[in-house]
Picture 1 (cartoon, rainbow, N blue to C red):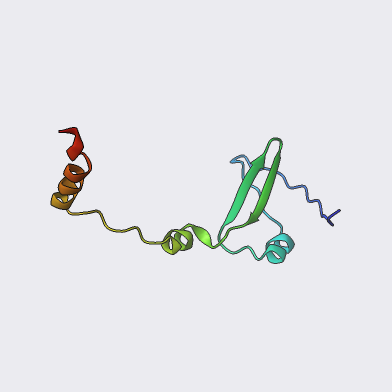
Picture 2 (picture 1 turned 45 degrees about the vertical axis):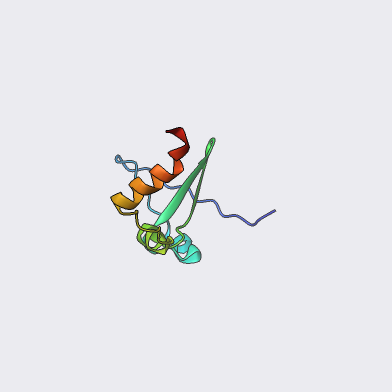
Length: 82
């Protein structure tokens, strides 16, 4: 069984909670956290680098074909229907 610490924190009127500094330091939290909900339990964990980092690390998709090339591809693909 994992070691665990339990902290109880009040919710503000706006539904906000302050994460204790010890937890932020232990988890290496900087700018972002991930909230994962499992039935009646919420898991808070460090983000894998932030949205912008994740977005920029996605592999580039090939550019869309030129409309004329697309038309030719479609004609070739569906030529048997004519």
